[in-house]
Amino acid sequence: MEIIDGKKISNQIKEEIKVEVDSLKALGKKIPHLAAVIVGEDGASLTYVGSKVRSCKQVGFNSTLVKLAESITENELLDEIYKLNNNDSIDGFIVQLPLPKHIDEQKILLAIDPNKDVDGFHPTNFGKMALNMRTFIPATPYGIIELIKRYGIETSGKHTVVIGRSHIVGRPISILMNNKGQGGDSTVTVVHSKTKNIEFYTKNADILVSALGIPEYVKEHMVKNNVVIIDVGITRVKDHKTEKGYVIKGDVDFDSVSKKASYITPVPGGVGPMTIAMLLKNTLLSVGMRS
Ligand code: L34
Image 1 (cartoon, rainbow, N blue to C red):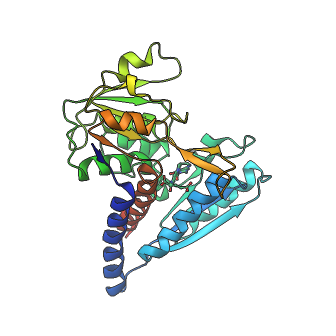
Image 2: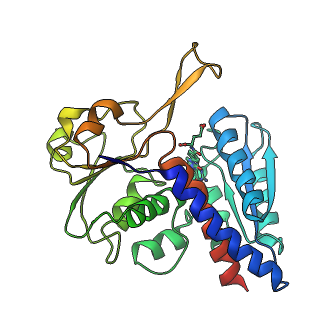
């Protein structure tokens, strides 16, 4: 069994990005500038966005954090997005999800200029991704593909089972792993809350991607020997014994499942840090496409 070290690979990618930023700077070109919009005070969202801003500094990007109150109206948020769309100094931006219930997420995502949509959530970019055209790939699935490539894991002809069909992970990763090319060419099954007998599918997976959000849902008896496990789940579980008052759990019961796996991503330190590295990569791509 080999642990897939997302923390290490994400640092490598950030180093690679820094080299490119340094050469842009040496040539007197524009410094990449990423903006992030966050609405409200959700603890996990604040952590993730904070980490995005910190990573911008690490690689030499400029960054802007737009922090908005939970009570903001949909129209006010749309105005913020138009400002970012029209601000020429900004190469790309994201609106951290989830948004408060009174705001229509689709409406917000549709308002983002597709050329600045470094999350790849706009229908234009999502459609391009589905057609295997060059575009922004949503950062979490992009990070998974990158881990698979850098660990030399074979996907061609393999049976990949994805648990979950969210717009930000399950659906896009199912498309990417089925697309033609390296990291793809897989036979993909997507299981979800309405699937009967989920175990029947997971037991037949060569590669299992879990993006469900139920801590330790995937148990040893649900997978076969030598399975490749990609655990995208990241749930904060209350634990008063710890300083922070919670522990982070993945979708997979790591201790038992890792014994059967050929490769496995840990939580934390697996897919999470890759999400951030690939967002930076998309921002660099945006600079290239805009200049
Ligand atoms: N718009 N919303 C938008 N884009 C995204 O790409 C995201 N996502 C998901 C939630 N909402 C979003 C993220 O940024 C999930 N996500 C994310 C980003 C980073 C990490 C996890 C999820 C991460 O850094 N995880 C660390 C642990 C962090 C902690 O201490 O809580 C890890 O090692 O897994």
